[in-house]
Image (cartoon, rainbow, N blue to C red):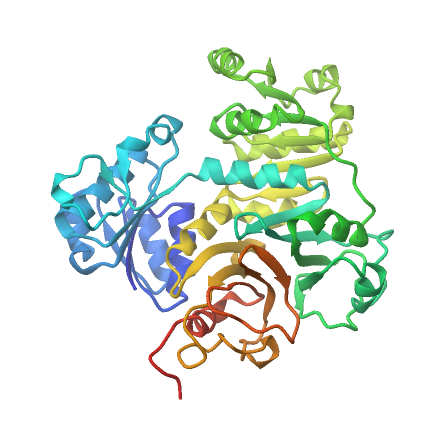
Length: 467
């Protein structure tokens, strides 16, 4: 595919790296020449220096024959206008736009979806085919972690029917120190599949005789109703959370408080007085506090030692890290920290900070969903982009498809790829060798090595015939 990426920031640069490694024709537009040179030195991409929304910049980048424009600059307005210019002047088939401001997202009539029955020129609004809201995605990500105590990552597939969960195996979990086959004996009524195990950052493809060790990062898939039971096999069961403390009242903090306040006791700490007033007027049950989270006295006054989850979600990485370390030291049970700089993520996660959340990686998965070949409806980027989980729909029949009609053990999967589950007519079928793929099945796969994604995509592309 020929793809134009507008904006060379963290998301744009990470996306370019992902797509360039998959043999796409990538051009990136940005006004920062130094950043473009740095990317060009590392990646096999073209760069154009200029304003992303200007017709001249888009034309120089080859917008006339581009398959897709992905607008991820730091400005919502630039992103929206760039998509409009690309669609109206250059008839770009697909436009994807990152929009942060809730004031825009709340007005759905500002945008229109692709509709080939209408004349493009007669439609009003911004012609954006796919809207991406990082704040919305991050809020969902944090909410799922709070709903599943003890999880490192929780990914949903098939509208929530099944989930892929990452969890740290800990001494005291019944399965730790035993072979995986023990799980079926110990829990005969619950079907699950371990998709991958990471031990000291080394991927292990699980077999029945694989022994789970203390400290392993285990990815397993199960029906949503069974997640809690499987987690209890890998670590001592963590009590459900009740008290949530949010540091930072920006877009993410406000969304998170609004999402949680009817089910949890929520406190939100914000240092800006005007923002505090606005938050207190718009949140119904959340206790809004004014102050600095780096102030030990404020945290102690608010009984931080009784807090189940401390979420640091300001726009300042250093402030988030320091507030999280302080909260953990003062007794908070679990600490979730928003980190924009990807270089920090590996440094801090797993110590005093339980989970480091990267908005870039959360957003990348949503973007990749619309770039993948074949009928791919869900993509999740895992382990800082090294691994990937995808949900693909099987089409065709045994003559035109490489998967339809075949038993799972007959499918020639790329090395390091496992099928975790199939969702068929709203029924979750955990993957076993005897299971056959049927047309319209949603197949959920885990790739330890995401460089093999092109081979996986080819499996789900329908051809006239295969020899």
